[in-house]
Image (cartoon, rainbow, N blue to C red):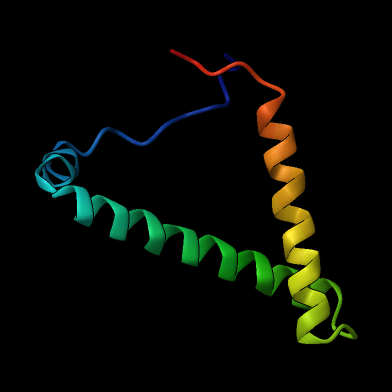
Length: 79
């Protein structure tokens, strides 16, 4: 690993909080994170393609998500 990569220290309290979540709480947290990620991506696409309509931005968003899914599926899962 290159020496220029540094990671933040592990937040033990956050890990404990996540461990206490119910399955429903974990799903809510995951959906909330997904909503944030999709909103950020939609904002990037809006800035990159200001001439497109909302429907066209949504199609671009779906294309980006599909591309990311295809990229991810090329790699073996880490077990």
